[in-house]
Length: 494
Image (cartoon, rainbow, N blue to C red; front, side):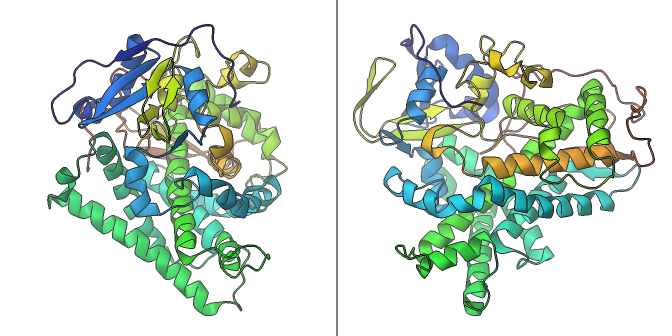
């Protein structure tokens, strides 16, 4: 997942996407069938003009152009419709702040995300995953989407707040996050404020969920402040509150910055990881051969049946390949915007100051010349010795450059622990008649995935599962993800 990319021999074709509607631009295409619309853009150029409502925007369709954007955050700053919508909710945290504030904020948070610190978090991830698996029963229909979001919310809330959030509060937080993420997307692709001031039920749900998220975070911060300095827990909120007092001798940060950091890390850490996990489990259910290979690995590495520790993670090679391919196939962060801070040239085209530039990891990850058979789920492409064939810079599920996702190491460790432990003890099967239907929102992944749990307990270590083991009425034949139809006909609950 290298963030660098060599300059190609020619990058310069500039075009315009067809089908612009008055007032709403390409909003209908982006809302109804966004993945198919994205995949159609490269045929119109390396840099393609589209319309977000009445606003002009330019989509970078070539990895070299995306690389240029990501490696020059001073010129291509965090901004555009996506971040215009995120900032009122999240504040100016490390993921949303402007370029001039980013280095200071990242330095403040970086110690919490170093590999040594992530290793400390692996134990708590294992505890939460074990709790999830122990609650399942043979033959139970499990709401995987809700369960993975609950899991990731509990993990990130423990990293942020230790154990200061109760079960009911964590559940409400999970529900609010899901509502906000769905509503955020349609507000990005059709940035017309008048549409969202209408008191529809969807708009009221979005505003209520946004208000409740802020209130939950504010309450957690206020509670800790009341107990400070006696309550110095070893969590991220403790680090932030120490920074407000300048305990480390630096410049104190403001209460507003504390709120922004917590909201940003909560928003990014819970939803994206949950969707990655849900997608991985959904895809494994469709590909029994990949599932068998995974079972063989986890039976050998996790012979004791306990959650993997930090020392086990390097041995879970197959598990990591599955997760990497999941992030290629369905990157949770699939569409991003930037804004130019000065007049600049991109693909030989002169962009004015304040221009919106977009890029899509999903688009790049599904270019056939970069990834052969892009719609197929092929974890083997990431095995040692195979990944070298992937062009540098083409794989950007966590971004690249100085603004690459600060939580990448923690997210991958959490996902590895979860998938490995679940696969060690359970086999998940699709319900009869299940068909894949993705509904992209501000992030991408299955949101209504229900699967049947079959226990693997008692199987001798290293014994492969029966090839014919599946829920009656389902098929064990792998199903290829078709990006031309994925996304369905609408974006629900927006």
